[in-house]
Amino acid sequence: MIKFLDLQKINLLHGQEIEARLLKTFRSGWYLLGEEVKAFEKNLSAYIGCKHAIGVANGLDALRLILKAYIELGFIQEGDEVIVPANTYIASVLAVTDNNLVPVFVEPIIETYNIDIAKIEEKITPKTKAIMIVHLYGQVVFSEELIELANRHNLKIIEDNAQAIGAQYNGVQTGNLGDAAGFSFYPGKNLGALGDAGAVTTNDDALAKTIRALANYGSETKYINKYRGLNSRLDEIQAAVLDVKLKYLDTENQRRREIADYYLINITNPKIKLPQRPTEELAHTWHVFVVRTKERDRLQRFLAAADIQTLIHYPIPMHKQEAYPELSTLSLPITEQIHREVLSLPMSPVLTNEEVKKIVDTLNTY
Ligand SMILES: *Cc1c(COP(=O)(O)O)cnc(C)c1O
Image (cartoon, rainbow, N blue to C red; front, side, top):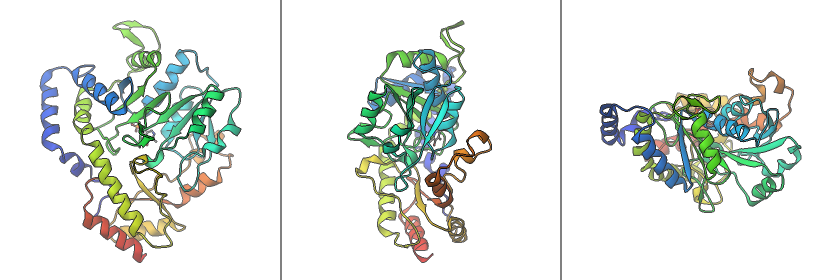
């Protein structure tokens, strides 16, 4: 069977090195806020090209903490609005509502699946304080117009970079395009831990200091609590694994680009709409390779019968989730169409050329 994502194989690529680091961390006797986290934060900020990287417990917390810190710093008040893409994973929206802020949805461009920057301005009100962009499926969404728009309305740009670590816009890494960025190192992400892990990056000293305290019980000095914080620390074990894997991220993303290229050139079935090729090669990390088709569930069954595993990112749009009854009357037709039609093909650095060819050949006979 061709797995959608073979995590065992992915981690065994660096098995010996990871096991050695894990053993060293285990034997060190120090498991939180130690040398491994420090080393990973330093290497991550160097990789992103920004001043600060703060390890946190997961990607959702990274985004929650950014907004919480802006509230503590007085830039955002409860009840203020944050622009978010209508087409995203629920974490982007949960981070907003968890801080008692109001998410304001903007429809995507169907060809890129990403927020339509041209539709943001009409949603801005005096209560809007930030724009959360999500580089969905690994593809960069950014433009000079976005910066200009944010400056003109005094809005923060927050990147949800959970899916696009290693992507670039005009030579700048995602995670260094806006005011702050949240990363997820969930095992299935392009840089995956062996459990939950996340990070925030920023060039803003005050924001970094506040987030670091908020993630550690709101405390800068032990037992002195400046804020009502959370316990959202990255642990040493996960940091050790991530620090090993970060070195290989670019090579692994490059292999994903090679596979995406092969899919884009060789899938010729007119019933299958391929994702748009990014304008710059590095503007996509191909976290997932998402096609569209009218009878999506039928195609998924057809591939399953050929032993090819696929997934749907994502089956239910945010405004139709039971968690958000107050959003259910929104009409977001592009988002809804995407959720009806998308299917994610196997994509990972450990897929073999034979497997990729089999997937393409099977798709072309559908
Ligand atoms: C994975 C993901 C998150 C959340 O990350 P966790 O580590 O699972 O909390 C947030 N946003 C997007 C777009 C994601 O894909």
